[in-house]
Image (cartoon, rainbow, N blue to C red; front, side):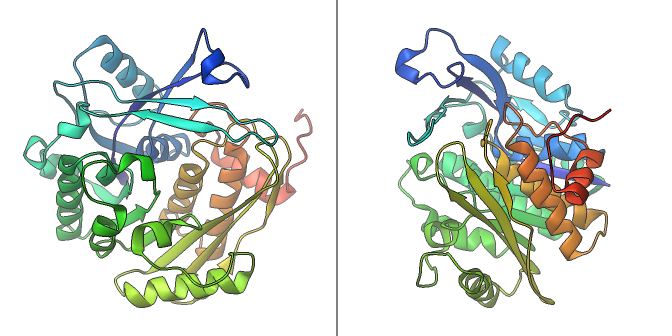
Amino acid sequence: MTIATLGELILRLKPPGKLRLRQATTFDVCHGGAEVNVASSLSQFGLESRLISALPPTELGEQALMSLRATGVDVKHIARLPGRMGIYFLEDGADIRSGCVIYDRQDTAFSALKAENVDWDAAFEGVSWFHVSGITPAISASARDLCEAALKQAKARGVHISLDLNHRQRLWQYGQDATDVMPALTTFADTLIAGRGDCLACLGFSPDGDGSTHDWYEELTAEVMNRFPNLSRVAVTIRNSSSADCHKWAAHLRTNEGALFSKQYHLHNVVDRVGTGDAFAAGLIYGLVNKMGNDDALQFGAAANALKHTIVGDTNMVTVEEVKALMESGGTGRLRR
Protein backbone atom coordinates (compact mmCIF):
# COMPACT_ATOMS: atom_id res chain seq x y z
CA MET A 1 0.00 0.00 0.00
CA THR A 2 1.44 3.35 -1.06
CA ILE A 3 0.44 6.87 -0.01
CA ALA A 4 1.22 9.59 -2.55
CA THR A 5 1.52 13.29 -1.82
CA LEU A 6 1.82 16.34 -4.06
CA GLY A 7 3.73 19.39 -2.88
CA GLU A 8 6.89 21.45 -2.85
CA LEU A 9 10.08 20.32 -1.12
CA ILE A 10 11.56 23.51 0.33
CA LEU A 11 14.67 24.66 2.14
CA ARG A 12 14.27 25.97 5.69
CA LEU A 13 16.72 28.54 7.07
CA LYS A 14 16.49 29.35 10.77
CA PRO A 15 18.73 31.41 13.09
CA PRO A 16 20.19 29.24 15.87
CA GLY A 17 18.19 29.02 19.08
CA LYS A 18 15.93 31.98 19.79
CA LEU A 19 17.88 34.54 17.76
CA ARG A 20 15.84 36.89 15.60
CA LEU A 21 16.41 37.01 11.85
CA ARG A 22 17.96 40.48 12.17
CA GLN A 23 20.52 39.03 14.57
CA ALA A 24 21.48 36.03 12.46
CA THR A 25 24.99 35.50 11.11
CA THR A 26 24.45 31.77 10.48
CA PHE A 27 21.42 29.61 9.77
CA ASP A 28 20.41 26.08 10.70
CA VAL A 29 19.39 24.22 7.54
CA CYS A 30 16.78 21.53 7.01
CA HIS A 31 14.15 20.63 4.43
CA GLY A 32 10.40 20.29 4.61
CA GLY A 33 7.07 21.38 3.21
CA ALA A 34 3.59 20.32 4.33
CA GLU A 35 3.08 17.35 2.04
CA VAL A 36 6.75 16.43 2.29
CA ASN A 37 6.43 16.26 6.08
CA VAL A 38 3.44 13.94 5.79
CA ALA A 39 5.24 11.64 3.35
CA SER A 40 8.35 11.58 5.55
CA SER A 41 6.35 10.80 8.69
CA LEU A 42 4.49 7.97 6.99
CA SER A 43 7.81 6.55 5.84
CA GLN A 44 9.10 6.71 9.42
CA PHE A 45 5.99 4.73 10.40
CA GLY A 46 6.93 1.99 7.94
CA LEU A 47 4.49 2.76 5.13
CA GLU A 48 5.48 3.27 1.50
CA SER A 49 5.15 6.96 0.62
CA ARG A 50 5.78 8.91 -2.55
CA LEU A 51 6.19 12.59 -3.41
CA ILE A 52 5.08 14.11 -6.71
CA SER A 53 7.02 17.35 -7.09
CA ALA A 54 9.74 19.26 -8.95
CA LEU A 55 13.20 20.53 -8.03
CA PRO A 56 15.77 22.59 -9.91
CA PRO A 57 18.75 20.72 -11.40
CA THR A 58 21.16 22.54 -9.08
CA GLU A 59 23.28 21.72 -6.03
CA LEU A 60 20.48 22.99 -3.76
CA GLY A 61 18.02 20.76 -5.57
CA GLU A 62 20.34 17.79 -5.23
CA GLN A 63 20.83 18.48 -1.52
CA ALA A 64 17.05 18.55 -1.02
CA LEU A 65 16.62 15.31 -2.98
CA MET A 66 19.26 13.57 -0.86
CA SER A 67 17.60 14.83 2.32
CA LEU A 68 14.23 13.41 1.32
CA ARG A 69 15.67 10.15 0.02
CA ALA A 70 17.26 9.61 3.44
CA THR A 71 13.79 9.48 5.05
CA GLY A 72 12.76 6.61 2.78
CA VAL A 73 10.28 8.52 0.60
CA ASP A 74 10.00 7.44 -3.05
CA VAL A 75 11.53 10.29 -5.06
CA LYS A 76 11.16 8.83 -8.57
CA HIS A 77 8.29 11.19 -9.39
CA ILE A 78 10.17 14.42 -8.64
CA ALA A 79 10.82 16.20 -11.93
CA ARG A 80 13.93 18.33 -12.49
CA LEU A 81 12.83 21.62 -14.01
CA PRO A 82 14.38 25.09 -14.47
CA GLY A 83 13.70 27.53 -11.67
CA ARG A 84 14.68 28.29 -8.12
CA MET A 85 14.65 26.29 -4.92
CA GLY A 86 11.77 27.26 -2.65
CA ILE A 87 12.93 28.72 0.66
CA TYR A 88 11.38 29.82 3.90
CA PHE A 89 12.98 31.63 6.82
CA LEU A 90 11.83 30.74 10.31
CA GLU A 91 12.24 32.95 13.37
CA ASP A 92 11.48 31.10 16.59
CA GLY A 93 9.25 32.80 19.12
CA ALA A 94 10.10 33.07 22.80
CA ASP A 95 7.74 33.55 25.74
CA ILE A 96 5.37 36.40 24.75
CA ARG A 97 7.19 37.14 21.44
CA SER A 98 5.61 35.37 18.48
CA GLY A 99 7.65 33.57 15.90
CA CYS A 100 7.35 34.35 12.20
CA VAL A 101 7.81 32.80 8.77
CA ILE A 102 9.04 34.60 5.65
CA TYR A 103 8.43 32.82 2.35
CA ASP A 104 10.66 33.05 -0.72
CA ARG A 105 8.79 30.76 -3.11
CA GLN A 106 8.18 32.74 -6.29
CA ASP A 107 9.44 31.41 -9.63
CA THR A 108 10.49 28.06 -8.17
CA ALA A 109 10.78 24.87 -10.19
CA PHE A 110 7.69 23.49 -8.47
CA SER A 111 5.59 26.59 -9.13
CA ALA A 112 6.06 25.94 -12.86
CA LEU A 113 5.25 22.20 -12.74
CA LYS A 114 2.31 21.43 -15.02
CA ALA A 115 0.00 18.44 -15.26
CA GLU A 116 1.49 17.45 -18.60
CA ASN A 117 4.92 17.13 -16.91
CA VAL A 118 3.60 14.26 -14.74
CA ASP A 119 3.14 10.64 -15.80
CA TRP A 120 -0.04 10.13 -13.80
CA ASP A 121 -0.31 6.41 -14.51
CA ALA A 122 3.15 5.87 -13.05
CA ALA A 123 2.64 8.37 -10.21
CA PHE A 124 -0.53 6.61 -9.01
CA GLU A 125 0.59 3.04 -9.62
CA GLY A 126 -0.14 1.04 -6.46
CA VAL A 127 -1.44 4.13 -4.64
CA SER A 128 -4.43 3.74 -2.31
CA TRP A 129 -4.33 7.15 -0.60
CA PHE A 130 -3.50 10.62 -1.95
CA HIS A 131 -2.74 13.62 0.28
CA VAL A 132 -2.45 17.29 -0.59
CA SER A 133 -2.74 20.57 1.31
CA GLY A 134 -4.04 24.08 0.68
CA ILE A 135 -0.45 25.30 0.52
CA THR A 136 0.09 23.86 -2.95
CA PRO A 137 -2.72 25.75 -4.76
CA ALA A 138 -1.66 28.93 -2.93
CA ILE A 139 1.82 28.98 -4.49
CA SER A 140 0.89 29.94 -8.06
CA ALA A 141 -1.88 29.67 -10.64
CA SER A 142 0.06 26.84 -12.27
CA ALA A 143 0.32 24.98 -8.93
CA ARG A 144 -3.43 25.50 -8.41
CA ASP A 145 -4.16 23.91 -11.79
CA LEU A 146 -1.71 21.09 -11.07
CA CYS A 147 -3.41 20.39 -7.74
CA GLU A 148 -6.84 20.24 -9.37
CA ALA A 149 -5.53 17.93 -12.10
CA ALA A 150 -3.96 15.62 -9.51
CA LEU A 151 -7.21 15.46 -7.54
CA LYS A 152 -9.13 14.56 -10.68
CA GLN A 153 -6.60 11.84 -11.50
CA ALA A 154 -6.85 10.39 -7.99
CA LYS A 155 -10.65 10.52 -7.99
CA ALA A 156 -10.84 8.81 -11.40
CA ARG A 157 -8.73 5.95 -10.02
CA GLY A 158 -10.84 5.51 -6.88
CA VAL A 159 -7.98 6.62 -4.61
CA HIS A 160 -8.92 7.91 -1.15
CA ILE A 161 -8.15 11.65 -0.96
CA SER A 162 -7.20 13.63 2.13
CA LEU A 163 -6.99 17.42 1.97
CA ASP A 164 -5.46 19.57 4.70
CA LEU A 165 -6.76 23.14 4.27
CA ASN A 166 -3.53 24.45 5.84
CA HIS A 167 -4.24 28.14 5.15
CA ARG A 168 -1.23 30.44 4.61
CA GLN A 169 -2.49 33.93 3.77
CA ARG A 170 0.94 35.24 2.74
CA LEU A 171 1.21 32.68 -0.07
CA TRP A 172 -1.94 33.72 -1.96
CA GLN A 173 -0.32 36.33 -4.21
CA TYR A 174 -1.53 35.61 -7.76
CA GLY A 175 -4.91 37.33 -7.73
CA GLN A 176 -7.11 34.70 -6.08
CA ASP A 177 -7.85 34.09 -2.42
CA ALA A 178 -8.31 30.78 -0.68
CA THR A 179 -12.10 31.19 -0.69
CA ASP A 180 -11.98 31.43 -4.50
CA VAL A 181 -10.19 28.10 -4.85
CA MET A 182 -10.49 25.80 -1.85
CA PRO A 183 -14.26 25.09 -1.84
CA ALA A 184 -14.03 23.54 -5.31
CA LEU A 185 -10.99 21.47 -4.34
CA THR A 186 -12.74 20.29 -1.17
CA THR A 187 -15.43 18.60 -3.31
CA PHE A 188 -12.80 16.02 -4.34
CA ALA A 189 -11.82 15.07 -0.78
CA ASP A 190 -12.90 12.11 1.32
CA THR A 191 -11.06 13.22 4.46
CA LEU A 192 -10.70 16.90 5.35
CA ILE A 193 -8.20 18.21 7.91
CA ALA A 194 -8.21 21.79 9.18
CA GLY A 195 -7.05 24.11 11.90
CA ARG A 196 -9.54 26.14 13.91
CA GLY A 197 -9.47 29.15 11.60
CA ASP A 198 -9.00 27.32 8.29
CA CYS A 199 -12.68 26.73 7.56
CA LEU A 200 -13.40 30.45 7.76
CA ALA A 201 -10.29 31.42 5.75
CA CYS A 202 -10.71 28.74 3.08
CA LEU A 203 -14.39 27.81 2.98
CA GLY A 204 -15.92 31.10 4.11
CA PHE A 205 -17.84 30.01 7.18
CA SER A 206 -17.41 29.37 10.87
CA PRO A 207 -19.79 29.14 13.86
CA ASP A 208 -20.29 32.10 16.16
CA GLY A 209 -18.08 32.06 19.22
CA ASP A 210 -14.38 31.76 19.97
CA GLY A 211 -13.84 28.02 19.58
CA SER A 212 -13.45 27.43 23.31
CA THR A 213 -16.02 24.63 23.70
CA HIS A 214 -16.53 21.14 22.31
CA ASP A 215 -19.95 22.22 21.10
CA TRP A 216 -18.33 24.85 18.85
CA TYR A 217 -16.18 22.24 17.11
CA GLU A 218 -19.05 19.82 16.77
CA GLU A 219 -21.16 22.54 15.16
CA LEU A 220 -18.29 23.45 12.81
CA THR A 221 -17.63 19.93 11.58
CA ALA A 222 -21.33 19.15 11.26
CA GLU A 223 -21.72 22.19 9.01
CA VAL A 224 -18.67 21.24 6.94
CA MET A 225 -20.02 17.74 6.31
CA ASN A 226 -23.45 19.14 5.54
CA ARG A 227 -22.03 21.50 2.90
CA PHE A 228 -19.67 18.88 1.47
CA PRO A 229 -21.53 15.54 1.43
CA ASN A 230 -18.59 13.94 -0.38
CA LEU A 231 -16.65 13.95 2.92
CA SER A 232 -16.56 10.80 5.04
CA ARG A 233 -14.72 12.55 7.90
CA VAL A 234 -13.50 15.95 9.08
CA ALA A 235 -10.67 16.45 11.56
CA VAL A 236 -9.99 19.79 13.25
CA THR A 237 -6.94 20.59 15.37
CA ILE A 238 -7.36 22.54 18.61
CA ARG A 239 -4.42 24.61 19.85
CA ASN A 240 -4.39 27.01 22.81
CA SER A 241 -1.15 28.86 23.52
CA SER A 242 -0.21 30.76 26.67
CA SER A 243 3.23 31.59 25.24
CA ALA A 244 5.49 30.56 22.37
CA ASP A 245 6.71 27.66 24.49
CA CYS A 246 3.56 26.50 26.33
CA HIS A 247 0.67 25.01 24.39
CA LYS A 248 -2.35 22.83 24.94
CA TRP A 249 -3.21 20.67 21.96
CA ALA A 250 -6.02 18.29 21.03
CA ALA A 251 -8.04 17.27 17.99
CA HIS A 252 -11.64 16.63 17.02
CA LEU A 253 -12.88 14.12 14.47
CA ARG A 254 -16.36 13.86 12.99
CA THR A 255 -17.47 10.93 10.89
CA ASN A 256 -20.86 9.66 9.80
CA GLU A 257 -20.84 7.68 13.03
CA GLY A 258 -20.52 10.72 15.32
CA ALA A 259 -18.07 13.12 16.96
CA LEU A 260 -14.86 12.29 18.85
CA PHE A 261 -12.22 14.27 20.74
CA SER A 262 -8.65 13.27 21.45
CA LYS A 263 -6.78 13.52 24.69
CA GLN A 264 -5.47 17.04 25.34
CA TYR A 265 -1.69 17.31 25.60
CA HIS A 266 -0.09 19.97 27.81
CA LEU A 267 3.20 20.97 26.18
CA HIS A 268 5.32 23.07 28.53
CA ASN A 269 8.56 23.35 26.55
CA VAL A 270 7.86 23.42 22.82
CA VAL A 271 11.06 22.72 20.89
CA ASP A 272 9.70 23.23 17.34
CA ARG A 273 6.04 23.63 16.38
CA VAL A 274 6.62 23.63 12.60
CA GLY A 275 5.22 20.49 11.02
CA THR A 276 3.05 19.56 13.99
CA GLY A 277 -0.15 19.72 11.96
CA ASP A 278 1.49 17.55 9.31
CA ALA A 279 2.50 15.09 12.04
CA PHE A 280 -1.15 14.86 13.07
CA ALA A 281 -2.26 14.34 9.47
CA ALA A 282 0.31 11.57 8.99
CA GLY A 283 -0.67 9.91 12.26
CA LEU A 284 -4.37 10.03 11.41
CA ILE A 285 -3.70 8.62 7.92
CA TYR A 286 -1.53 5.86 9.37
CA GLY A 287 -4.24 4.88 11.83
CA LEU A 288 -6.98 4.86 9.23
CA VAL A 289 -4.92 2.96 6.66
CA ASN A 290 -4.14 0.35 9.29
CA LYS A 291 -7.82 0.12 10.26
CA MET A 292 -7.29 1.17 13.87
CA GLY A 293 -10.81 2.54 14.12
CA ASN A 294 -11.73 6.21 14.19
CA ASP A 295 -11.00 6.84 17.88
CA ASP A 296 -7.66 5.02 17.94
CA ALA A 297 -6.60 6.70 14.69
CA LEU A 298 -7.49 10.09 16.18
CA GLN A 299 -5.54 9.34 19.36
CA PHE A 300 -2.56 8.09 17.35
CA GLY A 301 -2.56 11.31 15.29
CA ALA A 302 -2.78 13.45 18.43
CA ALA A 303 0.12 11.61 20.08
CA ALA A 304 2.22 11.93 16.91
CA ASN A 305 1.50 15.66 16.90
CA ALA A 306 2.48 16.02 20.56
CA LEU A 307 5.81 14.27 19.96
CA LYS A 308 6.59 16.51 16.98
CA HIS A 309 6.62 19.51 19.34
CA THR A 310 9.75 17.94 20.85
CA ILE A 311 11.60 17.35 17.53
CA VAL A 312 13.80 19.96 15.83
CA GLY A 313 13.12 20.40 12.12
CA ASP A 314 10.08 19.93 9.89
CA THR A 315 10.01 16.13 9.93
CA ASN A 316 8.53 14.09 12.77
CA MET A 317 11.39 11.67 13.44
CA VAL A 318 9.47 9.20 15.60
CA THR A 319 8.41 5.58 15.27
CA VAL A 320 5.07 3.85 15.64
CA GLU A 321 6.30 2.31 18.88
CA GLU A 322 7.15 5.72 20.34
CA VAL A 323 3.75 7.11 19.42
CA LYS A 324 1.95 4.13 20.94
CA ALA A 325 4.08 4.41 24.09
CA LEU A 326 2.97 8.02 24.51
CA MET A 327 -0.66 7.02 23.97
CA GLU A 328 -0.36 4.45 26.74
CA SER A 329 1.76 6.39 29.25
CA GLY A 330 0.64 9.98 28.76
CA GLY A 331 4.27 11.06 28.53
CA THR A 332 6.63 11.66 31.44
CA GLY A 333 9.91 12.27 29.62
CA ARG A 334 11.59 9.71 31.87
CA LEU A 335 14.74 7.99 30.63
CA ARG A 336 14.04 4.68 28.90
CA ARG A 337 16.42 1.91 29.98
